[in-house]
Length: 420
Ligand code: PMP
Image (tube, rainbow, N blue to C red; front, side, top):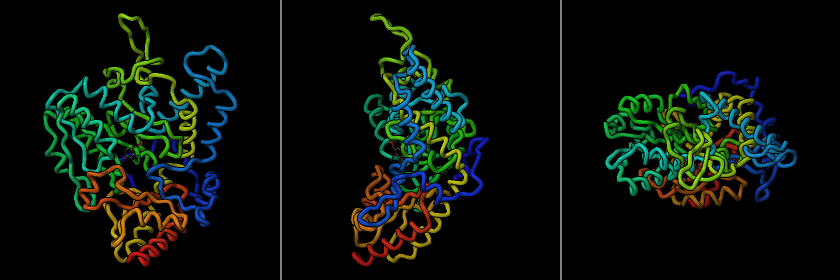
């Protein structure tokens, strides 16, 4: 469980966590796959959507859809109001100081590229350093490599120990006066490791570096509190948080966003345009060129309402219970190796089995209706560190049950019998 970030105040948790009741909110969970009830454990890649999110988006399209920000007519005003309400909901969910600190992007990937494409050229010079970790998703590696090609910056990489813990001592050793940015995953998508982000941020700030956290996996599994963290940038995706695809968030501290140049140019982000010179809006609109993902923002607002109503802490506690149970059951299977047993981790369980490729595990599990991810999880440097080409990954979400963990373990026994 994430002890490092506090759920926003006013979190009105449900009295008891009734998983069977919650499952009824997710229409897709009632379908079968290969003749078996669907057991959806691919939540690390993308989570399923509750009726409340689907209905909020349908209500937009059926009732008041129009483009936002520019119209004087009623539908445009209603859409704009609902869209900006979505921003307020997200700001409150992450405890940002203001909705102006919430920039809408297509997802975590675009949010990180936005920082690389604006903060990089504005604040980094040849020889300046960005610190990553070996656990990063490719989304938090490639943008910095592209920036390296462009500016000649230097990338430094924090290692992990064999259990998957972030090496804080090594991190301290990498920090220096050339460090301009520390860009780290908050929670590893492949190992579930929680990075000690408070300490990371404190140390980075002590050398004058800014911090960007990739919160793609933290947003769904943990309370994230921007003001408590004091982080400079924070990125996450709607679709892993039970919200729609095509929408994500870059949180940026107001005074830092104000110093950044535009990312993309186009409509919505300008104040005045002439062929000689143009001026730009203040953040967040400066970074939102073009027609935004209107219904998706409204859907994301519904998703954060949904998660908040259940209570982030209640969700964490439920998922922690599933992780502990699954770890216990899977540890008993001969030839099965769990990758990632960090001291602080969330409900992500990566494993390999002797004698078979992760894709074989995924295929056999699918025969039992169980959806897991099998592959390198867009973290090839981490796979190299683990010495495996790929793992199978079960990532538990709020609607998963102990019976589903039993089904996973039973199917893994089948894999063992088949390949062992
Ligand atoms: N970072 C992490 C840690 C992730 O898990 C993911 C999604 N797998 C991403 C970044 C990229 O997110 P998206 O594809 O939604 O932009």
